[in-house]
Image (cartoon, rainbow, N blue to C red; front, side, top):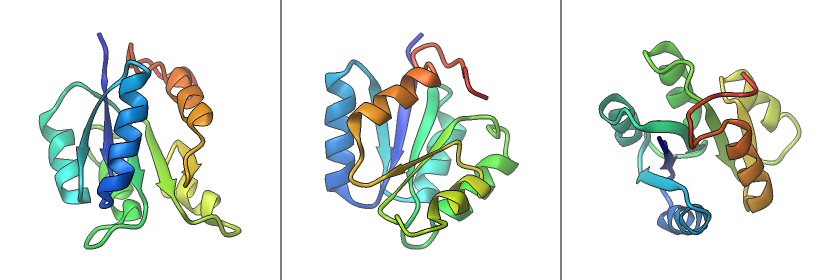
Length: 129
């Protein structure tokens, strides 16, 4: 069964671009423009296999959202931190917060697709965990 990729980003252009790339490669995705809406989707949609979360959003950022995911019933769900933050220590901060993968913007599509293959989103089996 194909699992959905949940994209959480407050910039509609980023969501559009990611969704288009994923759709062209045969992946199914849904999106939320806030972390709160993303958490709601995680609670209500059992077909989500991985989350791509922007780390810098208003109200609730990706770090707080990661803490809630890791403390909740979907604590083992793969989460990729997607961020424009590329300063020294940013990758480590995202991984320490609970992200499985760090993807810097602009996203390297080949790297994204390799990550999705590593986590075998289509079958929802984590190979690297």
